[in-house]
Amino acid sequence: MRYFRAMGYRIDFAVRENLLRAVVSGKAPTKPAANGIASDIAEGAKREARRQLLVDLRRLGNRIGSLRSILLPRGWRRVTDYRVAVIDIKENSPYYVFIELAAKKRGYELRCFDNPDDALRWLQARG
Image (tube, rainbow, N blue to C red):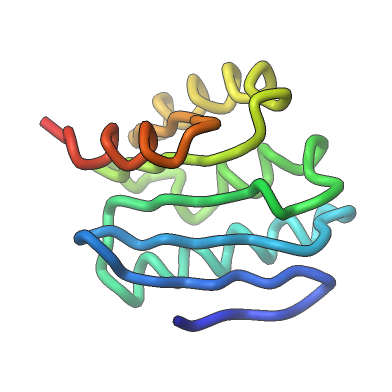
């Protein structure tokens, strides 16, 4: 398991079941911190040569205003064939509607789940 620690956040990475898991914890109160999280996750996916990502944000505080920066990084703008499952608490689900649509416009699939098993099933059902 690898992790990055900077600007008050930590990312624990693991490769399992042919996908990259990134568990983010700490705080992302600023745009630079949110951009850092996005860059670190994108770098991890590139390094591990994975196109299926499971990103768990349940332990990341102060993120609602930063979700777009975290999940729609500039480096993924022209990347196609990525499939990203985000796990977050149920109360944050309404915030993901626009992010899911924006991801689709950028050429990759992103869906939010409050149940980790559902997220994993969706990633594994890639057709």
